[in-house]
Length: 190
Image (cartoon, rainbow, N blue to C red):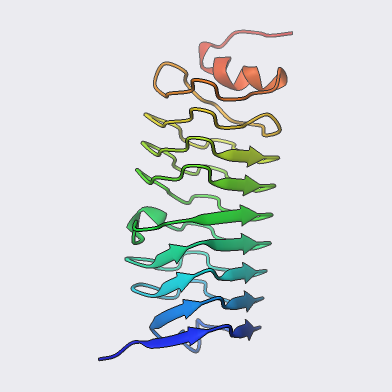
């Protein structure tokens, strides 16, 4: 069966939980205020696409390709990005809610998270070299055996990162953010 190829199309206010997105390849497409919650997006290829104001919470993304994708003002709760196609995986998040999502073992060098809520997100064994976490809430996010070299956390908060179990060489933190590196020691910093 041949997959469809769709290019330069705008999809607006479509509830894909009722009308499934056709399997295929989507290039330079824009999805505005669409609902993908609990849908199956597996085996779909998205290249140079933008999702604005969309809800993708709990969507199935097994072998889904996200190549040069921007998510803005979107809700992506409970997504398992580690099940995506890892080849050319490249995403950027701005004003998004990614609570309870997982990026386990993904290569995400220079990834950008701008003004995002990342509660209980799993970054275990990720490579986040040079990543930017700009004004992000990382409450209970998990960093374990994670490469954070040259990552920038200066404007982010509520993170807890164990320097002894992560690679943090040349990572950037604000003076207030240093507490997120020491909190596990249960010490008081005034």
